[in-house]
Structures are given as structure tokens and as C-alpha cells.
Length: 258
Image 1 (cartoon, helix red, strand yellow):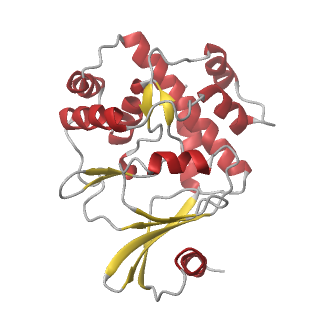
Image 2: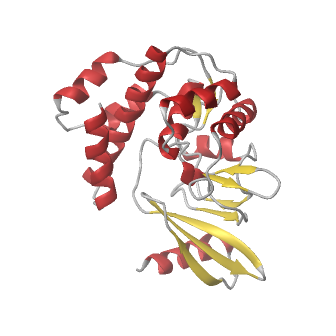
């Protein structure tokens, strides 16, 4: 089946007897395939999970989706992770980047709204799953030995890249809650800053707007933990058969940064 055929089959399974039209492929997904489509002059997005991810708990993901911080969910399949949500008009922040001050304010408000106590994001366990069966290079083993731990904790997104945030007309919408869980708020700040290409000074401006006071050592340690997770994720994707040039580039880039 082609990706669009898979999307149509998913819509039929989750939404029943509807007539979807005007399919548009949405780029940016690595392990998921997303299409925008229309039904009766309303627009939706269907997510089809292409690569199985046993580390993802769909029941937990739904708990975060219910917080209403992203687009409205129309249908969700626990078994596969397939999902239909309403389309939201607005640019992704990768295309219309915020200032560091706007990013820090957004991040603080997001963390205030994410539920806590639902799930703990355990980076070491996730990285171990990603690297199972592989022999990590020396610099990866060094990062593993550092055993990064959160200094403080709140509800976090944990995959806060600029492809996952929409600047809507009335508010910002945060997508892809597959990795959400209690974690150090600095981890989200590091991910956001990295994705937007912010300098160290811009990162500091973001943290000041957030109201998060941290020293340079803690920032550097959290950046290394982030690079380690991103490296391990890329290794796991390639091992699972999701061989794409951009994933290979991510693996190599993250390794170089460790």
C-alpha cells in the first residue's frame, strides 16, 4: 500500500463511513506519516505509525492529549498509535521562529499546564532500549556513564522541536505527546533551543524569560543528555529499518557533539 492508501485505510477504520478528499502529505515526521485531508469542508490530520516503538505507551500518551494543549483529537487507536485530529491553521515555529523571550514564556506556560504525576520520563532506560544489542562508541559510553538525572521536575514534553509547535491565531498548539512525562524543565528548553539554532546567549534569554536560574555546568550536562537521546533514537530507527538520510545525519551529528 502507498502512504496515502494506508492513510485512507486508517481513516476508514477510525472514522467510519466518511468521504475524505484533498489529501496533502505533511513532511517532518520520521517514524509517523501524516496527511491533511478534508471531510464536509472541515480539515483534519491523520497520523499513521510506520515504525513500531515498543517504548511508547499509548495509554499514557492519551492522558497528555486529554490536557488539550494540542489540536483537538477526534479518534485515537491505543494499539497502533494511529490518530485523527482537527487541523489547526498557523505556521510551525520552524517557519516563523519566536524570539528567545517568546520561547521562554511559551515554555513556562506549557509546563504550568502539563499534568504531573502521570508518568516519569526515564532517559537512561529509554536510551538503554534504543541501544540494546549495539556496541556504543567510546564517547557514547562516556555519556552513558555520566548518568544524567533531573535536578528538578515538572510535566514535560521531551520532544519539543520546532516542528512540534504551531503558532495558532489565538494560542500556540503543541503536537506529538509520545514522549511526555515528568522531567527536568531544562531538557525541554535545551531541545527547543537546539531546534531553533539559538546561541548560548539566546538560550540564556529564553531561560530568563522562563524564570529558570541554572548554571553553565547544568546546561552543558543537559545538552549532552539531549544529544545522547537523539543519537540513540537515530540508532534505534536505523536498526528498525527506518533508513533515511536525515536519520543517518542525525546519528552522525549527535555523535560528533558528544
